[in-house]
Image 1 (cartoon, helix red, strand yellow):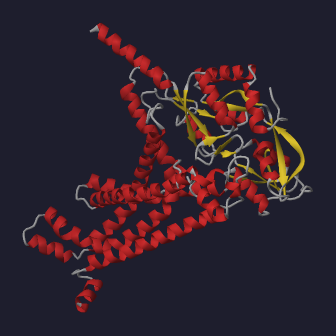
Image 2 (cartoon, chains in turn yellow, cyan):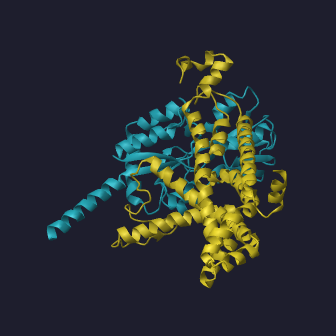
Image 3 (spheres, one colour):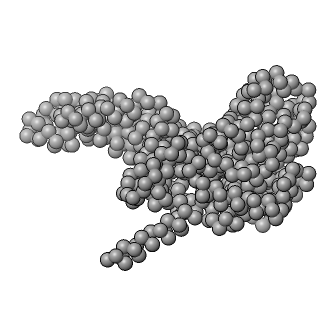
Amino acid sequence: MYSYCSDPDALSTFRWLSCYLTTGVHMSFYWSFLKVLMLLAITAPVALGFGFLGAMAARAPFSPARWIGKGYIAIVRGVPDIAFFLFFVIALDQGIEWLRHQVKCPDWDQPIRQGSDFLVCSFAKMPLNSAPQWQHEAYGFSLAVVTFAIVFGAFAANVLFGAMRAVPYAQVETAEAYGMTHRQAFWRITVPQMWVYALPGLSNLWMVLIKATPLLFLLGIEDIVYWARELGGTKTSRFTSYPHGDWRMWYFLVLLIFYLAFTKLSEVVLERIMVRLTHAQATLGGEAQRKAS
Amino acid sequence: MKSLFLGTAILAMSASFALADTVRMGTEGAYPPYNFINDAGEIDGFERDVGDELCKRAKLTCEWVKNDWDSIIPNLVSGNYDTIIAGMSITDERDEVIDFTQDYYPPTSSAYVGASADVDVKGGIISAQTATIQAGHVAASGATLVEFATPEETIAAVRNGEADAVLADRDYLVPLVDESAGALVFVGEPVPLGGGVGMGLRESDNELRDKFDAAITSMKADGSLNTLLKKWFGEDTATY
């Protein structure tokens, strides 16, 4: 990166570090932080959407919808995350390729499963074998987002289901007495008021989601944990200009600080949201705000 | 109409050839000198050199992919990449699940490395990487086996005293022992293990295997494989 980096052995500690920390492989490490943040930024709203749909389905008057909603919540909440991550992603990937195979190669005569091999025609590969590596990575990343969203969506659905029921029923009855339909009462009375009941549960979920991001590594995505392990490992002078011993402790220390700082920041933000949501609510917090002002 | 149909069929066929020509090469990237990530963040090492040369000779476009050792075989058979080129020794157990090309590295010798030379490798606690021939050998030798997901962790276990010694490929251990300033030493004699290192492919991929086999044969014949072996493993390494 810097011009003086051509001979790292001769550098002072500070300059050595400035060269060491700007190598190409460290750039991949910094990039992986962005990946994790991106995953969170995309997964959180999508999971909330899944949760909202799940909760709506679970309390729907139409019984098949209710079964689907309740089934989704019960199954995903009950299966261990790791099992779900390992199984579901492979199943989803192979399912997509199988569907593409049926559409694109109808006259393929060989079996798709040969022993342990999973074989689809080369047009059905997702992404295509010839696609550049970033497309493969983007595809893997999207699978991860979907998986995270489904898992955390189930928990969010349960939280929102409870929150919808926590809205005082008298309010809904009053709305209907004023002539609102069931749907209007749901969207105008229940939904705006439920968030204050949902937030403690949702903020818990958000914290757990932050801490669950190292599961990305299970899905073959090179996240911060992968790079910390790789970069911190012993490097001998034969294969790098920056040999060092086992530095994994320092790299994991950086991760520790990152996660702590990030969860602390989240707490501050969530606290502010809570204050806003409490405003004018028929809860203890809302009452306290009213007295204070 | 007929010619139109024929035209698209030919187009589709030629497209399928073009597609088949990109071969994705799966490696671990954590086992120098076989494969590792260099300072620039790229896959480097003996297998990178060999793989690129093989692809050139077989007229294939190759793309390198990193994958964890643990899941390197499952991801091959489910089609995420087309070859494994990751210092994988040819063994009968692996051969039941995947196919191998002929070896591009002669049967390897593994070695024990411990904190002192008098470690009891038959009765002590020995670390090895999961699902390697070394792990199999330790389990069969009567010693207590502790397995780790990465090679790095097997060495760390010896350094911090969790294991008495580590069993790994000798070539991987040599630079580590050299630069440990006496903290790590070889224990006993090298152990010959495995049937050489080969490239792993899906059992159904005979065509691709034949191409790589032919390329390896030609590299053995003109001595270019020996040159690469000497470049990465030193002058006195085993050659063809």
